[in-house]
Length: 411
Ligand code: FEO
Figure 1 (cartoon, rainbow, N blue to C red):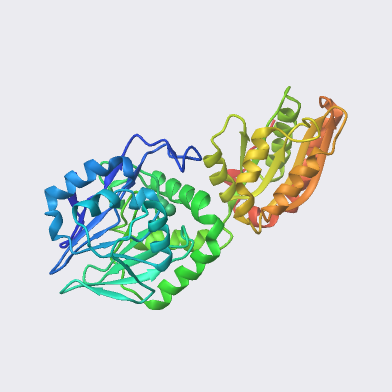
Figure 2: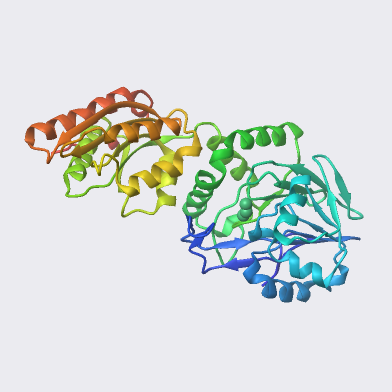
């Protein structure tokens, strides 16, 4: 299935309804994905990006329905990761010598993956490629998502081909923003940022500022995954502007794992204490052993505060808590606050491990609470107060969100 997105541009990618895990098995892609590739036809024809290698044959067969391959004058590889460059090996066997435009780092990563001396044409920000009546301008975007990443801008149609930036893992029948459920687009845009772009959000902020300062006329933003922002490209830009600025919503995530229910009981009671103090906040409980890590990363990203708990396990913490804390370590979540809790039998020091891991993610830890064995009524009161006190410490921005309608009477 190929479809036209403007007078001169045809989408020639692959919609992958089956993909449920990405980056190996690291990232969940519950809504599938797409590998967006674009054919621009002018006096010269250019192919922008390709698809993941397993779909190479299908990609080339579909591409041939739209253009004779030897009429492709140039290839632009905005990014060398195999989900976008995977089909280039076989394609360039069919049209050898076709110039491949990429950054200097792109040449390294493409050569590193394919070990071929293609006709690389390395470009820098501001370099242009004339197609006849229109031209492509290149913008390097290092670390968004690899050192090699760049974006390409097509004049005339005013389309920004942004590669991973503004991407979302969504497979859809109609790949335009005005045809997709807004909640799905919002969630997957955030999930993509939280899991893939967030470690490099400083670079993203710089790039967004550059784009704004250039006053580029952008009629469409076409990322290399998911929905194309045709009706409202400003939506994607505005969302990213929020995400890069220590984003948070009035949400408190309570993340825990439990062995025999003691730490789970603490989690529930701490959550009750938070709710009592902040009825306008959304309090989310997630057992990390039963939750999707990528979705938890997204919830942590949007949370203003966290409560993280584990029982002691051999002077350490439970695997799923260690896993999620390790996953958010590179994110540098400045501005978020946390408390730490957990039960223990004979060694309570494990909460210090959680504290250290949270701090290395940029999260400020306000307080810690341990309970020996199973909490009784007295210690549950302590848990409730622990949650309530934490909520008080962070209540300034939350209270702005509370209306009378939001006030819940807890019994
Ligand atoms: Fe979608 Fe960094 O590749």
